[in-house]
Image 1 (cartoon, rainbow, N blue to C red):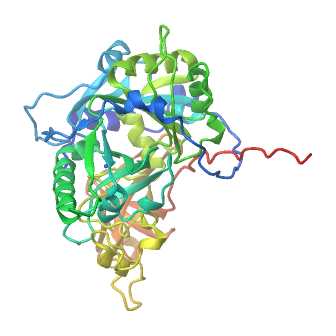
Image 2 (image 1 turned 135 degrees about the vertical axis):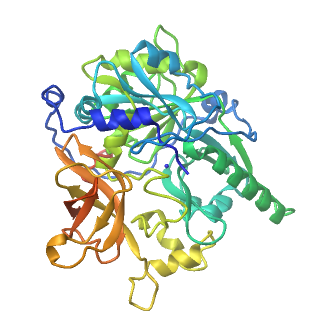
Image 3 (image 1 turned 180 degrees about the horizontal axis):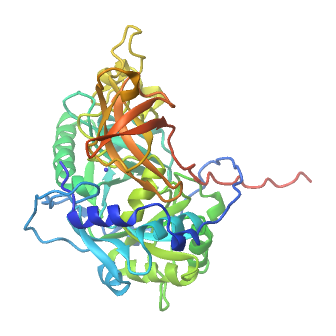
Length: 494
């Protein structure tokens, strides 16, 4: 979550995301995790508390996006369109950020005080703050909003209770089962309101897609009272606080009088609250969503643009440099790969389906039949059956790889083992890869032919033309640490 890669970012990731150095290892800690049970979503803040936040909604304009810049492989494609800046741009410069083009924005890849590997390990041991304000924040509202979103995604949107989120994929209109983008969908308080976060790199494509689909939907439901409106939180900040120290830091920044109990806010749940700001004062209501893109516990916080710096600085001050540091795209990329999370334009595309991508769970169990009503349902329903059992199945699968020797990068071909005594046959391709700072091994994500996807299967990856042994591995490579929430203690019987 069609891409042009930044040479600057590629070189930084290759040079800095290596096996942990002596300096990086000083951040490694051991943590004991306690299993907990998910609870029913608690009620959000009163409607009046949200109004200031929601009054910033504007009608979605038709916008133009710059060419995407990201990760592993350099490209000579350039753009003359000026890069946009997030509300935290000046803060990044003050903290010595190395800025690169990404998704049409000038974004930090790393900061002066930590290498990418050090930042990665610091996140695993403590907490890091990521600027993700380049992501596109949308709101769909109206009596038909849930049904509309269920047409364009296979997720069970209608069943979401208020304050609950789900990962979804946007499906191609042509019924092929291809993925247009991946997105997060949250049902907000109030009738028929959904908060949707989509990828910055897909901004232009998604704007066109939603514009066409909303218009088409509203034509079809004229007179039925099921209209939909798409709006944009156009000047919002969005920051991700990630790592085992995240909850404690956020708790310290909750404004006086806020009753939000973070121990009862589990992964995939959201709530409104006001936060303290650096230098004094209180923010408007922000939307706090538990989750993120690192595999660690953490939160994504949607903030008014002119309050983003004040909130971010308050979070940094609350934790102090021993507990929280700013982190950039380099650490974000290696963390998400260790967590087995896809990056659109690399691991997902319009030629992959949810079943190809080993994302069966994004298709609601109640919507796996051919008549589920979303684009591509007929194709996807057939893919759920194993190949060779009377159904087409899928010809390839997304897998994880542990690679010996040099790291395998995007585009590296995967072939059968030379040692098998036969001429090597191409069976797949790497879509993401880097050294794992946590494991000290080279990891990669790839698509391989069905039959080569079983854990433990040995293959060769061609790195600079040389075969390197690789073993199909279970993902995530590093166990995720999502917090599921604690049940409210029941009052004892009297």
